[in-house]
Image 1 (cartoon, rainbow, N blue to C red):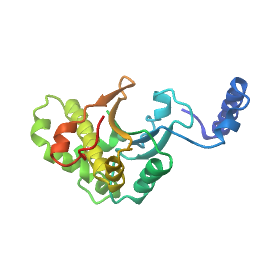
Image 2: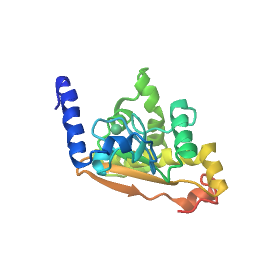
Image 3: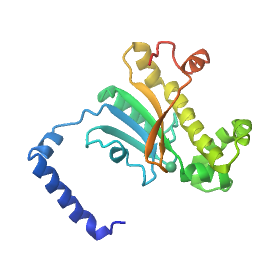
Length: 212
Ligand SMILES: [Zn+2]
């Protein structure tokens, strides 16, 4: 664990390492950004997606909040999404959850008080209630929480597909591909969730023009 007093020193060490490898590194970085990915993930401190994918600065345009929620009335999120899609023209949008997520656990265990965090997590409680039968058929608490984590990502993907900015892009024929990920924090590996594209098209969640 780093001490506060070490952070700026570590920064200088890192800058020097980068310059040793490429003396123009920061000059190039400062020219502008053209990230191929918009990443929507959890605020959890163990989830720096650049590290897990060995990516350099400039790869991911990022929006993070507790339990990777996508709310169609969240101005912070909508501004990020609009900028990523309209200005940066990202090629992919990734919503990523992770196992052992404190937000998912809180929604499952004790999302009943009047705190702000309970209000924030209430939509996950709703997902749990809507999928009660499937979740209760799983054998262990860990399996139930893992599945709730996956269902949460799928629900957020539905929200993305329903936002006008995205629907308009899909209908125009030039649009980013949308993906759901789970980062398995127990093993460090990322798995891609299967999106039921056909089923969601039939239900009107995904515009018919969308192709993988
Ligand atoms: Zn989390």
